[in-house]
Image 1 (tube, rainbow, N blue to C red):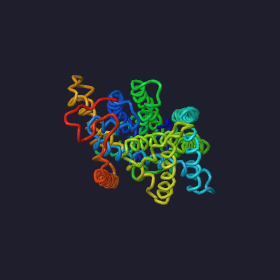
Image 2 (cartoon, rainbow, N blue to C red; image 1 turned 90 degrees about the horizontal axis):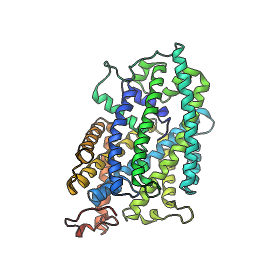
Image 3 (cartoon, helix red, strand yellow; image 1 turned 90 degrees about the vertical axis):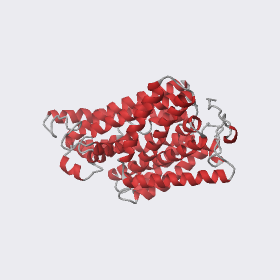
Image 4 (cartoon, one colour; image 1 turned 120 degrees about the vertical axis):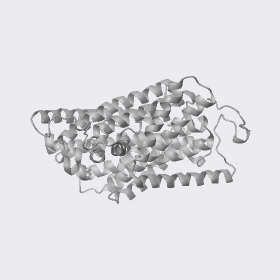
Length: 436
């Protein structure tokens, strides 16, 4: 999750939302704030790497944790692929002589080398990249607002927030199913709870603050860009992957288009993918540590204290899937829908985990935190999934079916899901799940 995440998917969100991308981002932020609240509750109960996989497994039951981890893998494994692809396409636009596949391999190699060096280097470089992105965003907003004051674009309007002529809840939630991609990554913070010096409370707070700050930045930039779109009617009919850069060019000229393109390439290809690779490698490590994935993924580098094998595997998958999707005209759209489908399914189970662990199993009397808020968050996400891309729904169901088969194989091999610190399924009886 980076400050300029909407740059690359602005056109798609604008088109899907009927010209109301600001509302799409606001609804997405509100939905995920409920999800962050549930994350905060579960990370407090189980301060372990593995995120929603661990929370569902320990809060409900190990087989549910496996299936939830399986669904979120669809999100986490594909996120780096999408980020590398978007960055490579942006760099190809800037330097047409270098093919997309070459840029993709360069980005993967750079990030893998950084992540293998340890989490401290990742943090340092991420801070530097965020500073650069904020400078570019500030430049776009200043130039964009000045252009609007000079009479360029369509003038100040509330239509990017609400337009009665194009509004409907199905349309809006279809747009939210895409817009939430810009927020995906806040959940990766919970992956680092075992490496955090601030404890579980700090992790929960960080997720909420990250969502609020990102939401403010996203709403501001898409509002300004919406008012500068050269052809609003055409963009409503057909998505354009260059919509944001076209708006930047209208505001400041071709130089601003090149600046925003370069920022997209570097932020998606380095800063964002660097952290995405960290998150998915920790998920693979956590599942392998519990013997639910091959054991070689649980190997930790003695020198740098990182799951080296998991990081390398993610890199190889990113190259393979990224190259395949780069050959498809709908590669970015398809990856976006698939990633969000996996994330939304996992977030829904997360809310259920809070209710089961706190309200049902432990009899909590905190009705808002442990029952009402999770139910509201779950309801919003269910509606988003229902209105998502149909192909993504189908692939999501296929992936879910594959997970059921994998779970059946584990049972057949006598390796039924069990988590460290929990009694085995055979001896659970009525025992309560407790934090280790």
